[in-house]
Length: 303
Image 1 (cartoon, rainbow, N blue to C red):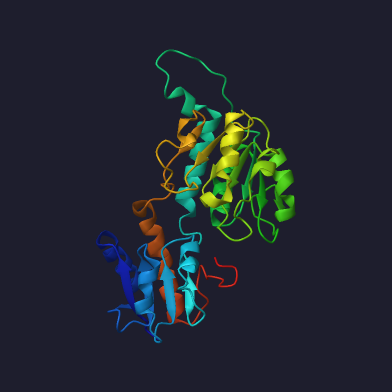
Image 2: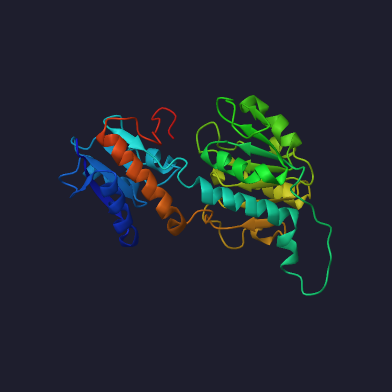
């Protein structure tokens, strides 16, 4: 079966994504003739008019898709796939950069206007706790392998994560927090992960520990984080995502010298376009051959 696929994307991305459809063996078609959609714009409600009975599969361009469930458009009438794991490599690079910046105290020294040597640290020997060790976690573990770190990987099911020294389930969160020098939050937003790190959990961290959040802002209690930073109870935080998002000007988080805020640019559209194109090509090929698609959305779990 040759699938007919309509690509809804911004003009600067459409050509690359349509080419990916064709490389996968699909035919780029109009919306009216499509039996599958590639949806690469941030407007969940507008997809409703295109969800005709003939559409059997929808490929989304984002990895976190909570807004799609909030809009009530994800249904059981067709297969939905998200970009789970697609942007893992650029985001893992970002996490490593933030860890190195924290270890070398870069956020503090960039504002110096006179010679001020500081004591810094190395990643060698550090313990990295990865909360939500999916695609991003696995990519990060590969980058960390030569650096002499020890990693604790937490997943929803507690499965063994290749490359991690230790793999745990949700009941291992407290131990992970107590032992980690860097805590990487890479979980999707679900009912179970909202507010996962709040006052009690942050209090378990070592005084020098850093939190790096590349999952969703809602996973980390912002007020609890501000209180811990103000009290000098943690080393610092690198936040690619925040709650609220965008983080308003004048918010307390902007003022801390040991906080890095990167405005959700861990993976930009330009950085991720090639990765998304590879996923689309693979899924079009799988769809045409009746194989299980990559990045399947679990409607019950909402991710």
